[in-house]
Image 1 (cartoon, one colour):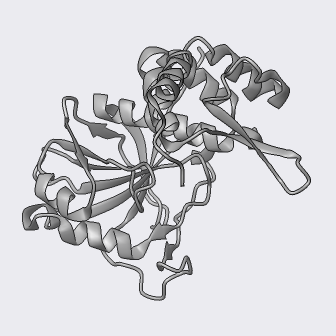
Image 2: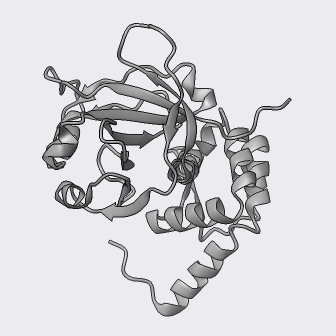
Length: 265
């Protein structure tokens, strides 16, 4: 177990996090050129991952704290450049974990600002094209640690995020203000495979106040455009990560596509 850093170490770490914006260019080059160009990014922020033969297999943030702080800071201050970086990193295996973390932060920002998004049902036969999903602006932000806390704060017009980045099953819960609109369990991902923990989804749904449960719940995957075309309905898993024989009913899966870079004319 890692001990709590002393004040000097914490100060050094904060300086490194603050430098993330200045070193965004190094990440851009890495995403398009390879690992050898990452030397400018402080090692307090990024760690190389190696296999048993000491061959580099990727790069990850140094800790969950670093991941969250860097993602939030860069997303807030250098959003346009960050979006280009995430787009440029498409298909770069070594950048997969970092890309996912950065995409999640961009997605939260876009959804909380509201707007119109491409939206389709995943677990139903093809039918008429669905209209774009319109998410209202001005959602109230909230944070929860447990399903019980979510149930206590969930209300119309709320966008709630779990305090822990590794919270089981969802990255956010969006409750539209419109009384007829379903509650949305949001899961951001840059992967084409992301099974759903059946027991966790049921627990979250059961925690909602009765008026919100009566609206219905949608499980919504939020993905970038390069993933959207091949993303399919995902299996429901047990707590042992096996496909459950009794998936929850009444929780349709949907796909929301996030455009990272404006379409060129």
